[in-house]
Length: 444
Image (cartoon, rainbow, N blue to C red; front, side, top):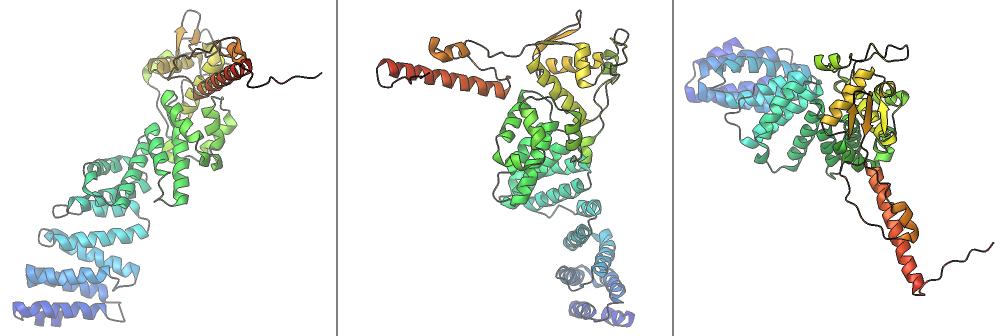
């Protein structure tokens, strides 16, 4: 090999390119590939140092093309050749930018097949984007995001997602756009923006371009994120949309979805079953602020009973979501409740239960007021027990009332049923008065 390279070095510049190209083909065509990596490494170093940029680009472009088309079938050997060639060219990336980028794409593909997600992402991060069109930059950034999320590296993934977002209008390719939307949903999921993630996952679950099994997974992810989202009117709307989706009935998490939508209190056994299906980032621990810790200790001296919980607050994202839901559900059952009673319901210290209720009231997610003198929480549930029930029998006209957008969906649905029944009864009475219908007679 050294003697032949020495002969090529003595050739005229115009004859060097064909000579080196023939040597590349000869090395790759060998049956015995034991020396292939070593010979190619020697060839690349010689070409880069002595052949000049024009010849070097020709030879290296041909080598990169052959590597990309599978001239070396052995995975490990191909990976070694790509890595060694890349290491040789990297210091000269200004002269061989196109070849270096192609090698990085190939190495990322090889690492991805080995499920080395973070390593593949780091290789793609080193691609020089100066010569790439915006559409290609967008694809590269989306691919980096996907690889980083496979290894749960959501912080760095969000950085590259933001870069991709600024280029999202650069492509009209439907597949790339769908990948970007999926990255949006997953980034929101990892960032614990569960309400936003649930809406994005649910939107994707309707797209016919996506495989049916993947759409089912996205629907399941939407339900999981909706359950973990902060309790309140916004989550109620998302839960209603998912609950009324007929596909949800086939999901393992349908039981907890239906209980949350119907404002039923969740039991520990149901929560444990649901917890088993959560991903690590959805089980993240949450810290309790010093202010909340101080507020939760205010009533400790007066409520020091053996049966009183000593927990100062939720410990995980799921824990917080369930406690807030049970608090919201209790507001549909009770007119008021003591701090101690709410603490027993949520498995919290009375002061911690009051703190959670106070924060939800402040944020507009719970309607009520707190009486700290009597240690009571009063719930302002929008009662729809107006005269509809009495007037449904035809004793008078039913006057419509403005719906409170923060009311639970189930109560709105019940009110609409009562209004419909009242209107039907009124119509039947008018028809009976004109003799158009006969009232049924009841025989003893």
